[in-house]
Each structure stands twice: as C-alpha cells, then as structure tokens.
View 1: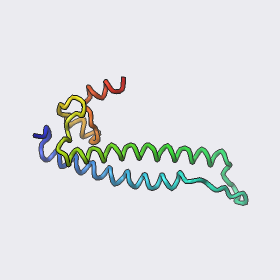
View 2: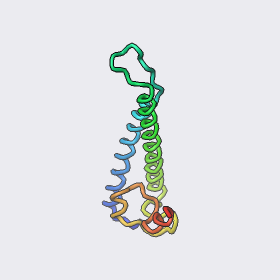
View 3: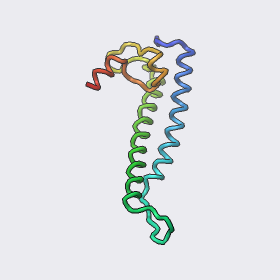
View 4: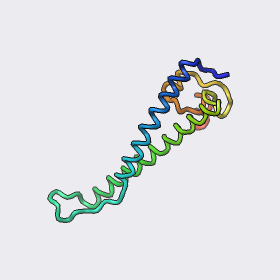
Length: 118
C-alpha cells in the first residue's frame, strides 16, 4: 500500500513526466552547445579561443547535470511502475509527501539522505 493518497500520486507522476520532458530537451540543447567550437578568424568581434573553451566547458557541465537529473527522474518513474515509489530505498520507510512535492525524484527519506551526505 502506498503512503500517498491517489491524488498525490497522480500529481507527483505528472510532475515527474513534466521534468522528464524538460530534461530531455535540456540534454538535447546542452549536447549541441557542448560540441566542439570552430573559431571564425575572419569574423568581426570573434570569440577568443579561451572564451570558446570556457563556454564549451560550461555547456558540458550543464549537460552532465541534466543527464544526472534525468537519470534520477527516470529512476523515480521506474519506481512508480514497480510500486516502490514513495518509499525510502535505504530504510523502506514512507517518504513524506512534502519532500516528494519539492523533489519528486527523491529516493531517500530526509534521515537517510542526511546520512548519505556525511
């Protein structure tokens, strides 16, 4: 039995689907921005090589972050399908709705998350 009410489950499921779509779009856009930059030496106001490399590095970092978040969201959706959503993956206690409302991809309760960060 889920610790969540049916309307809470539906709300969280919709939130996860929306995040999945947004993150997939972000991964696509970041992937394009992280591609190697060709410098146009003839262009007026051209970007220096260092600036181009810095922008590419930032795009790669954004891509990695979006990919990680997408992985978490996909994991949460898989837990929905498996019937494990809403329970801590460490202690198996219910994760409060308030936590899931803020971060629906959460797989740990507050206590276990705090322990994992120490």
